[in-house]
Image (cartoon, rainbow, N blue to C red; front, top):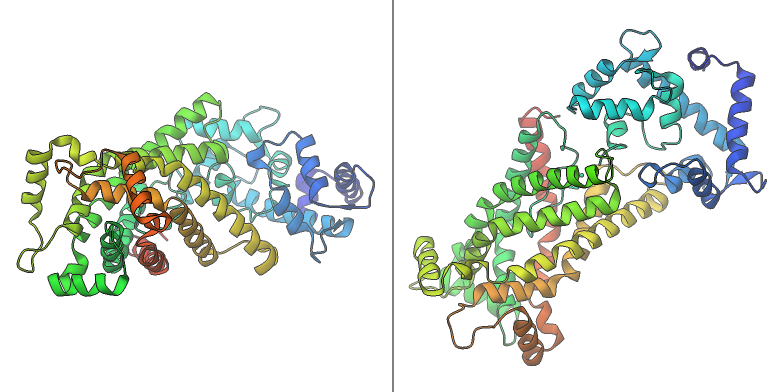
Length: 468
């Protein structure tokens, strides 16, 4: 700790007084210990913005014996470890070793970590840390900015402490690989994510075809008869019908979603005068809206895929893609390509909200009860993302069933649904509540293999593209 004391210009006694004063500030009730409520109140009293508050995580990291209380010796041990950690990374960034971090040194450190900033964003970052506004960051300012940040202080984490984006493709909508919004190799990350999503969707295509076939059945929908019917009519390849389009739409959907997300982030950040972190509500709105924009843009491909999967076979062969597309255009008109779009878009924001809430809750539970206060690794985050995605998809599944039924049914027939509400009404009248959950079982069956394959291929692609 001697180097830390020199960098701060403090004696051991002065440092002890400072840490004790901070502990007493949080311990406003003079209990002799801290709990979550006191830490939360203390962070609020320090006027720390919600996006920078990690009250629960801070409490758990400090609470070494997990008794729900943070004694002074536990608080002191956290401070010792954190200040030493911050000193080491400060020294690594301060390449001139003059006791200050210059903006260009911070830029170089972020660039080495694969994060590219423009001059405006770099200036905002420095301004946020540089309390005396002299254009450089001292170790004291660096410490004050990150002292109550309970996670590991790597340059990547420090930046994502400022800005955050989860990677689980369960075949329903494109996902954006984590943390690439300012990465210099963002196109390679999108390519890796697109290839991983395509392979994952191909591997689980039989379950996707079965799900769609069951969704459109208005009579009793049993899995085994549906499987036998597909096998009898189309053979093994029948289980992969429509998969080509499902794979093709991964790349444009991912790119559009990513671009829309970035634009919306800038708009929201500009409105809030804080482009670096738009908060949970902002990320939720931007992510849901970007998903809706991407879905609307590629929706004709999705409708044609559904028609391919539900059309009757002729002589053991499905309809040709070009013929099917032309028939829809000529017989039903261009509006038919967007049939079912409304229920598809209505599910976006609720799905994103449920997914994000469940993901954060599961991560918190795993950190507290399974990992005993250590930070969840990639596999735990993958598991949390898989479960949260499943919960979100299940909650909005009735909208997916209505969307599929509207997509599959030609709009120029006499018994065609007149719209979303008509489809809901007829489904409930003829099939009851269970009609909204037809095909749910194969949909849930594909979640774990889809997420696992996506993760493994994505990690493999990162190595192949020299992104690790």
